[in-house]
Amino acid sequence: MNQMKPTFCILCTMLLSFGVAAAQQQPQPDPFAGNLFPPELIMQHQQALGLNEEQKGLIKSEVRKTQTQLTDLQWGLHDEVEKLASLVKQNQVDEGQTLTQLDKVLGIEREIKRAHIGLLIRIKNRLTPEQQARLLGITNKTRE
Image 1 (cartoon, rainbow, N blue to C red):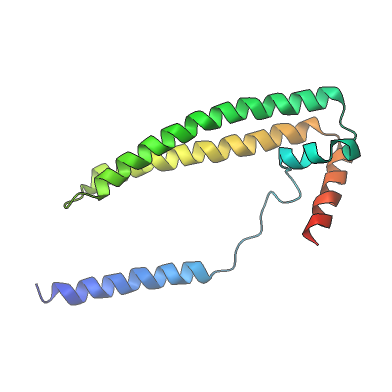
Image 2: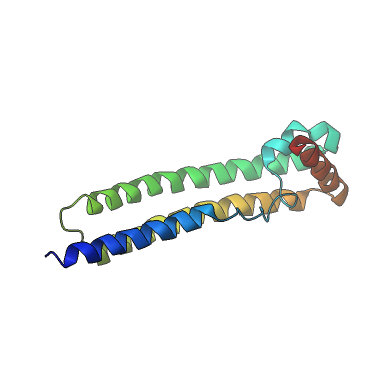
């Protein structure tokens, strides 16, 4: 048992140092910045962008559909996270079962991110190149 303590401490130290090193890395640039635009930004500047009624209607429709989808996914995510939490609270954690449950949680999180990006793509595809250029100018001004 005494030999196990130093090994455990070394393992913990290694894991902590990996975590610290990862946290100290420089954040990666946002690959979507300037390329995809949040619907709120578009609707706040709809007159400056010259959105027509068809574009407004399509954007609103896409946002509503995505919100419905995201609500369902969020409820599912909460359920799966609750199950994961109950597994790791046990005195003896079944690694296989817990990792399988983690995969379910990560899968739903992936679906949520995919739905968000899909919405942004569909919205961008409804905008003209001129409107996209105006939005880029607006976002650059707000960053300054």
